[in-house]
Image (cartoon, rainbow, N blue to C red; front, side, top):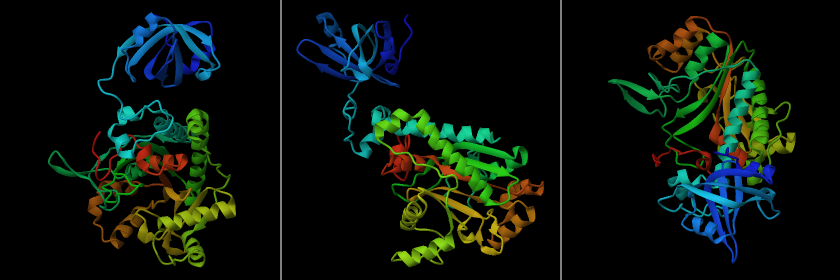
Length: 434
């Protein structure tokens, strides 16, 4: 059997006999010729049917039928990539039992989001709908590559846990062989513990939030890109690593998913050598002076405030990225390190990108006594966190880390109006299938 050639490789084989395989993307019938367009993971290739026998063989093929085609490659300025397959032999491999939910061959997608999601295994074959996931995969590759180069170890942590990570908020409870347990909201406790083993760790994996919000930016399950590193001075060391990771992710998207970027007409961001930062107190002063609202004293930023600050960063610093630091301790988890000299604020940060928070991180507490004090201040029972606290009883270095929501990142890169457009089989308040 002739080895399979991908559609994108066909132009390099002019004059050769090749075999391609994929889905019947489109059929076009003219007076004397019939054209089949075959789609595979690399793109499209045109097949020319000239003889009655060739046309008859393909007559019963429905769009989205899976076929193998052998034939000779001929140069053609009108064909995708400048080449096409002539004198073909077509072998049907399987056929669809029902038509796709909408025409996958059309350049634009006119289907509504619920239709796309309800029929995701078929609808995501459309090149424009598949492209964000190619971009997402490239970004994860860049995330891993940068951290591998910085001496991080990739880990995989449990997704069924005995206690809630974020003090019991928004958790999915489950019955674990008769014991109460939860789906993990984050790998936070475990990645901190592994700093005591490897010093630098990262993980990519699902996290679960019983998220009551039904918005374009919230999901009940998403992919979290987490990193944690030890022997830091403060949260600025974490921010420096995140800056390099962000640049590496953008570079990986440009290098590995260039065709997807071009197809969607995207402009990838530049990552400055030093991402500008602003303390939340200063940010709130700016907002009070230049907007109709006065957010001073609030523990967090509203979405409108994030958008305004992002626009401000572009105007003042020429950066689509902005660090907002120092969030009030009341808004941060109990393991967050307070800001020296300003105990009401924290050594934490959010990274804003194109008007939206996409990363949260900071310095953690690392002394056992500080954890006991922090839990007592919040009225938490330390027994609920006994195994977690044992990590710090064994001695831990100053450390910190961050977590990035992959779907939010991809949505910002691609300009998606809803995070579900860049989520494979999203889970939210209403959707549990497919």
